[in-house]
Length: 501
Image 1 (cartoon, rainbow, N blue to C red):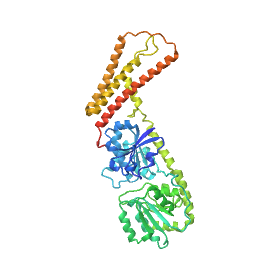
Image 2 (spheres, rainbow, N blue to C red; image 1 turned 90 degrees about the horizontal axis):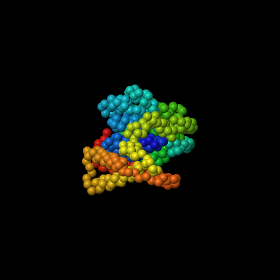
Image 3 (tube, helix red, strand yellow; image 1 turned 30 degrees about the horizontal axis):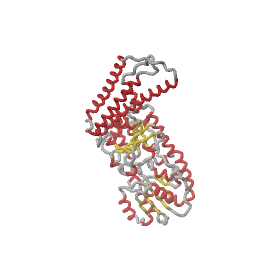
């Protein structure tokens, strides 16, 4: 199974995503830049690593058997370029929204993105709208694969729209300008006179929290409005299940920040809640106006108010929308299908990068390489049914084990060898074993081989062959243990924070 190294913004419940941890036939490492981006320590496990603690990309790739690099943001793709150049592994970059715009980006961002377009192998925008933005910036279209985010249809089960007299409007998303919460609040205020029992609930947290609370007071929304902080997933799903209408008033922010396609819209459509949204970014790829829901012009209070009034007035047509919406999600946004699509996109890149052709060397390959460099055993004796090689290998194993004990004593009672001494130590070890094996060959050439009586018993010959194989395996293991001890010494010598890329 191939392993993908995923570099993500942080580790918290929102970034603990299926696109990292559940891609079929691919193992993963969830990489973040530094320990401070490990936001939720309860999610820490042996698969979470820190980029700034990687001293040697080549050694890291070899040790973890990595076949592919995947950055989950444009800037993270730039950050992995030096890592890619040193390891020569293919690099994939997901594009999720703001990284396809110049919104709040540093000077030189576009030039760096063009460099990433040139050197990266694939780009996974989450909608066609963002793919078109990348092409306009100069990304070759043949490097682009649109990869929609998927919805777990087992987690978000369909239920028919509510038939009661409640009028609960729900919106979920970070409290930032592009989510359009302030537009939704103003539109809701315009219809309150016609629908006095209607409520508006917004779930999220972010930089605009104080502003939205102040706006609610200015609009005199009173108890009809609730602003809830970030909730656990199960509580968010419960709120969505109890909603009558879901609204995502997405818009392009003043600084150019845009959406891809809000996942909350897909989830509401999967669960059977009628949806209202805007003609923004990739949303029309999800919703066709008056088919799977209602779309209005973005950043337009009056249009959104009219849509809310239309939906609340025409409750009888809700199920027409929700059935079509569920079908759309099942066809194009099913998590299982999208993860399989992601695996197929990976396959396009991994096939040319076979194990052993880059830096991916297995332990078995290492053993064979070491044994290949050692002198070959003597040819089969004239009179006996076995070669002389097992005797030499047994002696080599004995000396290798003695050396291992010496190295363990060195680690236990002395300071570890200096970094610059390790290559010399490795060469000395290799030369010593080689010289002793050559000497053993010479001694055996001088020695007179005593003939033995032929053994006709097939059972005895079979046991001898087994013994020979066991001895050969012992020397392999001994040499491999030497290498592991040397590697451990190197790792301990290099321990600590070394910056990173």
